[in-house]
Length: 178
Image 1 (cartoon, rainbow, N blue to C red):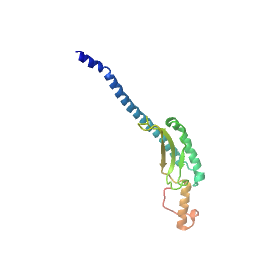
Image 2 (cartoon, rainbow, N blue to C red):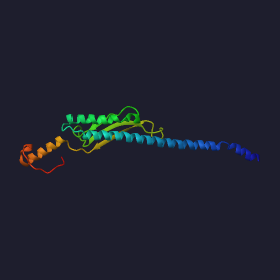
Image 3 (cartoon, one colour):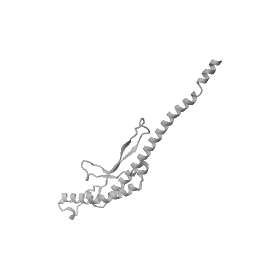
Image 4 (spheres, one colour):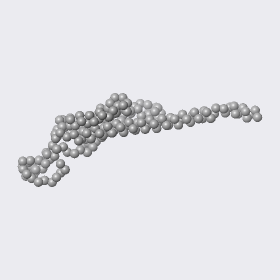
């Protein structure tokens, strides 16, 4: 009988220790998933802000084909839309600067739209996801309708090819979508 009592005394608290060890592992996994969920939500919100700014950039039209003059007000409109979203509160830190990508302004970049580059802490610890921030890029490159000025230039060019008169002559031509 005394042998059983001695074994029982050695095992006192074992279930408490097992509970604490398993609870800490499960709690760490739970926190990791919560952190990943917040990171994904914040990233989607930042992307939504860039997408709306890109749409505003693409639909702003001044009937001007010049990249230097025609896109500056469109970019200001895109910044205005982007500033409505308070991205810096979710991703932490400073507000990422909205950048524009226009084929006429950068060589070898065929897409039109906006993007931001920002940093976020990803991991919970150095073992799970790393401790330092990671650099993320949110891009929104959309298709673009031609401006009215581009349409006028294309139509005049087509008229010139048909009869050499340009826009001064009256010629019927196939509708090219303008």
